[in-house]
Amino acid sequence: MKKLSVWLLATLMALAIAGCANDKAPAEQAVANAETALAQIRDMAQRYAPDQLQTVDAQFNSIKDGLNKGDYKGVLAAMPSLNTAISGLKDAATAKQADAEAAAAKAKDAWGPMSTDVPKMVDAIQSRVDILSKSHHLPHGVTKDSLAAAKSGLSSMKSAWGDASSAASTGDYTTATSKGQAVKDQAAQIMQSLGMSG
Image (tube, rainbow, N blue to C red; front, side):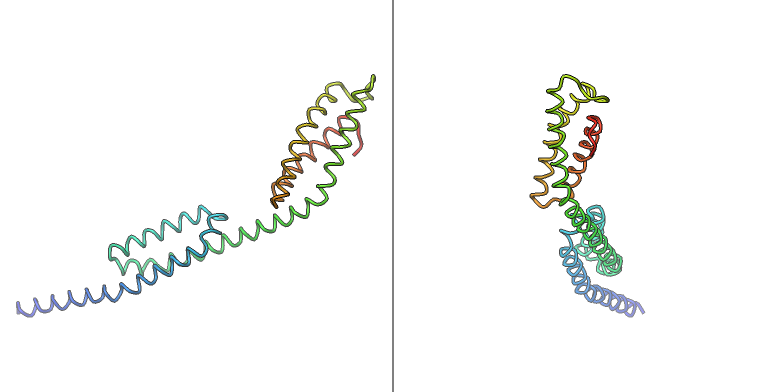
């Protein structure tokens, strides 16, 4: 009887080892596949979904650690969840990239008219400031303070417009239109303070 139980135990051990060996190749392949899938989307995910990428990386590293420790069954059990996470990361990054590209295209369209309108506004303000600075009497509704504010506003607007134009020249229309809109808003306020219609 004792001989039989020793033999049975040895057989079970052999089967368990064989089972582990049978799981090793699929586990290694599954981890390699996941690593490849992650590598293919890493740059896009880093740019558009960095927090989600960090979570998926942590999940992947934990599974890889299990593989290194020989827990092949655990690795195989955890793979469906990791594959779903990688797929979700790809979808999220792709959607955010599409949104960013759409916003950039919209900004590029907006930049065209803005790039002619804003310099005209700034030139008109400059001309008005030059005339008012030489005038002995300011028109009704225009104060010395508003004229002084317009003068200082002009230099900051010109500087900001330079930044906007630089951004546009590098193809960053999102930044260009954002800065350009700020200049346009400031110009509109100054024009109002100087009694200009525009």
